[in-house]
Length: 516
Ligand code: C2O
Ligand code: CU
Ligand code: CU
Image 1: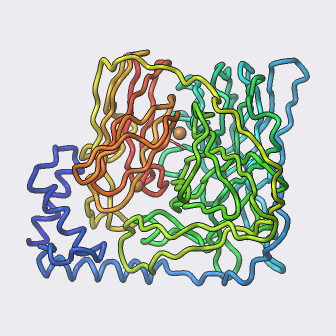
Image 2: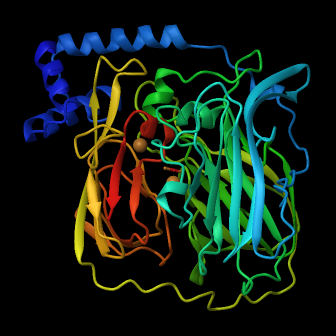
């Protein structure tokens, strides 16, 4: 394969033409041969191309390589901080009114170093918003950054024009008000983060993300003491500054050397008897495969609130970027344990070190008295038979013209275009969506404006139902996995769907659904 032909093929894809079978196939062998280091016997790439790519990768790496801060510099073992609440400025029943001010601030996390973060109200993570089902929410957002932004209320069932679409940016120096009502039945664990055009990766890795909890007045688990674990990922240079994305970060999703919980590195977490834990993976690209030793661990909630029944976990909990979970953990022993993320191979490309288990926190457990979880948690909404079907295909391709790396990520053969409508749905229609990951690394799928139900997973010709039924807004796909989802959009307007490895989203792995 000559380089010239290859580039021509790529530009055909970029200009929106359908990906031909030949191209799709060729694309595969090249990626598996060159980038994954797997299946190199399948590599059919010509030598010219091969050399060019390596040259290009090396150049880019040298250009962007930065010296990183050693992990030993960061203080650890501090008590897990609580998430600070965003203050409700209204005293009226059922109204939540507050202000989020985006500004850059210097925070000293490491002795003798300060780090410049971009923050909501000067805090990392951003302040926790807590409301009840049925509340009216009015949040004024003041953008004192030097670039435009939006606030996206990830997972919430709210109108499209209040959901921070990239088309609705708040210019630098301006402000806007977001206003919405929290629907009944939507109690759950959500979050907020920027969703501007082309800037999401940079804004999130500078610190912009916060938690949003919707509570119900009839919560079957309200008696259980609750903790919040908000995971984020921080990549610091040896000067303590937030590092730029390397080419590997753009390809694989950024992973910093520090995984923080509530902004703290390897904190000490005290668990005193049976505890309910809300968990957010707000990392840009890092997959967490959580192992909580010494306890019975029940999954009781997912992205969109409680499950129908508690589900006893018998393996680590995989939480991909943007996913949330609610757990009830019942300590069986007292003592010190480590909360860990167990190695998980998500098919990262390039020259990357092998995946390893790593420590997230020290757990100080206090054995629980015997405890009975309710057997039923809630009635999940019943969606009828689908009346429409949509299919989504994820692919990877190479583009030497992409300055942030040579890999680009496509949905149905296209990169995101703010002015293009990719799919249309009718309001309230129940739809079945098939998502196929036709690539060599894991990607997840997230859609705005709704919570879906996974009907099946299909991998290597084997179709399996999900382990439990849940409302989700983000779901992982292994390479070549196909999943089927059922969903319904209950507002008109434009909705994004994308991979939530934020670098992939920013590089264009995003589409737009118009609900009419
Ligand atoms: Cu957290 Cu478009 O998503
Ligand atoms: Cu979202
Ligand atoms: Cu992805």
